[in-house]
Every structure is written in C-alpha cells, then in structure tokens.
Image 1 (tube, rainbow, N blue to C red):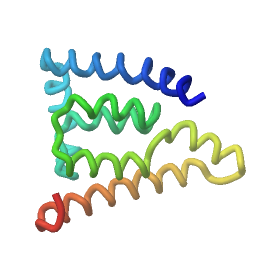
Image 2 (image 1 turned 60 degrees about the vertical axis):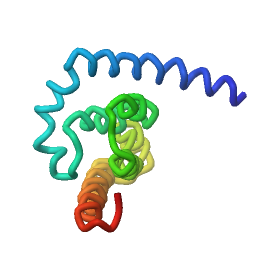
Image 3 (image 1 turned 90 degrees about the vertical axis):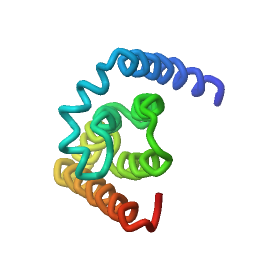
Image 4 (image 1 turned 135 degrees about the vertical axis):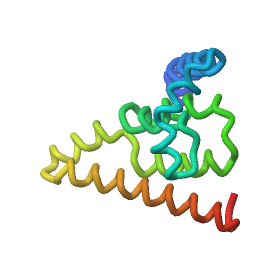
Length: 133
C-alpha cells in the first residue's frame, strides 16, 4: 500500500520538479519571480518562492515541494517556507470542507493565511537578529 502512494506522489512531483527546473534554466522563473518579489520581500524570501505558496494553497504541499526544490534556497528559507505553507496549505479544499461542517470556512481560511504571514514575518525577524538561520 505504501508503494502505491509513493508512485502516485512520484508521478505528480517529478514532472512538476522537471518543469520548474526547465523554466528556471530558461529564466522564466526569475522573470516571473520579479513580479512577486515585492510581496515576498516582506518575508525576506526571493520572489520565485511565491509559486510554491500558490501551489501549496491551491493544490497541496507535494506540489509546493516540487517547486521549491530547484530554487537554490538556503536551509533557513526552506524552513521558513515549510512553516508558512504548513499553516496555509490546501486552502480551497479545506475551506470547502470547513464550510460544509457549518464552520465559517472563509474566515478560517483568512485566519490561516494571516497566521502564515505573521509566522513568516517573525521568522524573518529572527534571522535578521541572528537568532536563527
């Protein structure tokens, strides 16, 4: 059973990783990352990481990992992205599930996004103070 799950993930993650690596080699990721850089600078992250956050929010964490892997991030940046995406991932599906239970899915989704932003900002502050990273 675990082998079946591995191959399902593998056939999803590997093509996405290759696609991002090719886009990176041709400068597409860097070019598009410039548009996202002002927002990602708030967290001390390169603009290219915005694509991983979009993938985490709309698809899942495996897609986000496939996008992050070829980006040449520092270990601290990967940790920071992981914490932020761990808080705010799969927002569409989970927001729908929360709404179907009677909870206010939109409000909870917004809370998760804000909490992820606060966590990323605090982690950037820790790194700037020399406490971590």
